[in-house]
Image (cartoon, rainbow, N blue to C red; front, side, top):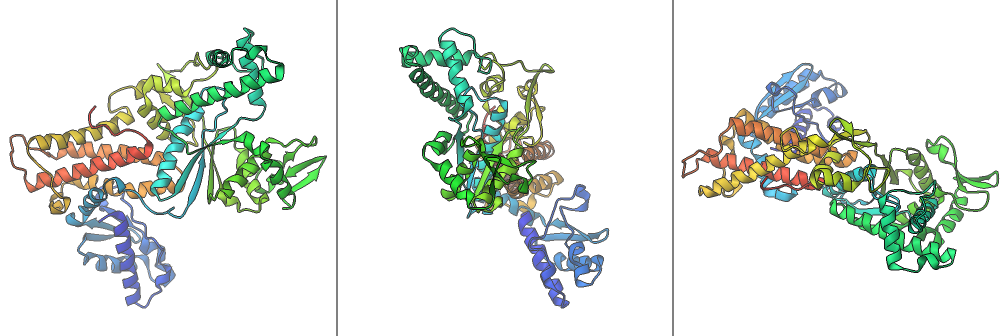
Length: 553
């Protein structure tokens, strides 16, 4: 019996108990919560449903808990029920009912853990969106890992997810990039407000290779050549780096298109009719203070030029016009103000501010030998995605960036995540998967076949460590659900570490394959089924993180 099935059983039983006593069943929560108690001596699962509703129907929590315990004890799936404290119910499952978790994991296979919470939701997930003026730095690298994992988690709950990269090919940063390229091409030092690093010289050389007479062109044409070719080369490099990192996008949206198409101007005119913008001091202002901003923001400057926020509003309008129900923006640590601004933008468009969600990511620091990692020679000022991957590989980089909550700063110890020991979280999880795959190969070499899971006697899995592992596997659907609801894919990573720990404890306590046996006992078959279910859960979870599940290490 899975936790979800147990919760449904408890609720249905509560309906019967209350109805039999002519008590109001409408006070019951739509979904009863059952949780694994911290102390395993208290049972396999616990629920406080009696304490939640007893007073609402005019009885004591312990009386209601007692009635529920009596009714539940008669269920085939329940081994025992105890009333604890002021009205908690501690439940122990029958061994065969607990084995249903193994059956479900193996029957659903790659679909185990998936749900349908967001099956009707069309989500636009915008992340990374680094300016095409240099390699992706660590903040963007973190979003590349976390954003991709979040997209996978949302899709696992049925959402139709479009991964989108906002290509900032308009504005002052592009002008500085072009001036930096031209300076490098002419052998001049980088402008004071420009970009440094070896990559600037490399791209400048590539521009001249593509258009050898670029420096001889009139100034406007020269600048355009360096902009067009240089930005294109830089962005191609960014896309290739992301692809090699396991992060691909469905849409690359060009900021410049919002201006050249007239979308920004049309959007501003539309908002002037909404009442959410106003004219003062020669400029048009967005009423962003109504949504928590510290001040209203200029939308159209006094010289008639659109402010940066005008493009953001037009971009949101475009997303909604493409049919997205939810627009998630994943932004850097210095973008807190955008939460209120984007919600105000939605309101100014006559939309529900709830269609906008802004997730803010914090800084990443790399540590080696106990000291911060030095700056990248190629990038000149920052450590890049390529630096991290070169140091530890894609899997370790992705996992390490995902496993901590994105709204907190994180220090990544390069020495630790390079180790092939259990101290290294990604190795610990991947090694558990490889060990399980090896176990199945060893069984096959002995001529032992697991056979169909429905033919296995899973009621034989009565050891304490077997029960711990089974119940841990049963938590996977709930973990994926909460990761999607809270937009926190790190929950999946931490859960996988719990699975690996439960498996290693099980394997140390419960012999699976007996040396010299040429015929497997029913217990061996049951344990092999449990091991394969564990391998499947680890593979599914690693897949949600975009991390490989190796069969050998």
